[in-house]
Amino acid sequence: MKNSVLALAVAAALAAPLAAQADTILYGSARVSVDYNDEDNIGNDFDGDANWDVINDASRLGVMGSEDLGGGLSGVYQYEFGVDVTEGGNFQGNRPKFVGLKGSFGTLTLGTQESPYYHVASVVDVFNTDKSFGATAWLGGSFNGFDINVSSNRATGAGALFRLENSLYYTTPDFKGFSAEAMLVMNGAENDVQGYSNGIDIWNIALKYNYGPFFAGASYIQLDGDSRVDLGDDSTLDLDMDQWILGLGYTGGPFSVGFIYEKGTMNENGLLRGFRFEDVRLYPGDDAQNWYLTGQYAFGNNTVRAAYGQLDTGIDGDDKIDNYLVGYQYNFSKRTSLWVEYIGRGADTLYYGDQNAVSIGTRVDF
Image 1 (cartoon, helix red, strand yellow):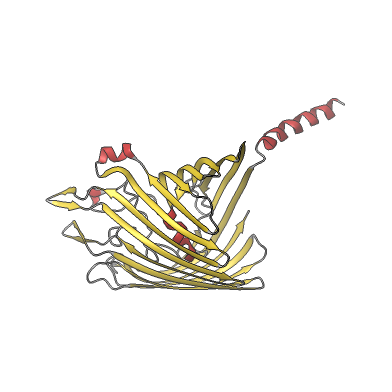
Image 2 (cartoon, helix red, strand yellow):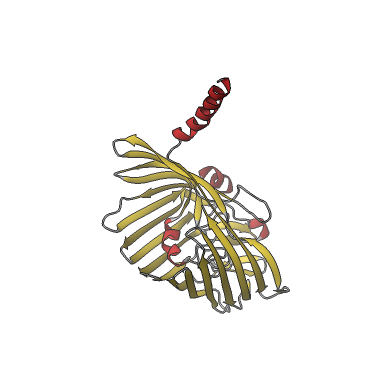
């Protein structure tokens, strides 16, 4: 009898936290591939040998949920970590982490969050490999204005237009397919020390239409930085930069297609933002621009994908970067799949040369 009472007490103790957190969802995605990569990089000065590697393709683990506060108001949250199932480095990265409120007015959250810009660009982010939607395939790279390393003569930044830290995010309710999103990024304490950003560091807005088979979106993002940042030796850097994107999508039965066009200066690194290295100084160039088209078709448990795009770095003397991808995915179930994808790049730029890569991987979502 005592053992039965003890067992019931333990069961009740274990069940109580679960009952209190009934609206909490544990989720994740394990994505690993064996990749063959043959790539020229860094202005073709580096022509490394082709290699094989086991790659972690943005695996993640997270919890998300909500609490009904009454009167149509809910508290919402998400806490997601990057999980490297190949080499460690777990529970890292700037993956979504936020808390906020949701009601008839829309949703307002604070934290590290996906940008409105990416919510338009993601209409073409359909491949599994981590190599498919990188620096040469779109202009939404890693600059966030908080980590400019002037001492090493690089104008790169931390973070990504996938997700931005120190952000406030508002999403309107859906009005028959129409919605709007706005993001403000504020890291005043850091920028007050470095002295290159004003007030609101980044602001980003998007307008979207997503109804039935059709998607259309437009987004504008601006870094409100100083127009003349002193680099020493009479050199300056303009950090008052912006960028915009248009996205279109259609999904009809087993077929879907996506297209983006983007233009601007707020890009992944010194090259793609239109800056040239010369005599250890940075000089502004023309705005970069990019277009990218994807399509996919599903039949039975199979999905085939293809993509082509062309990126212009905006630097005189640089050839345009051509990106072409094809892929096949077999779905064992709704959660488990196997893929084979080819990633090709034709380029002769300051940073990037040609690339041929094959990714063979598996993915399990839960």
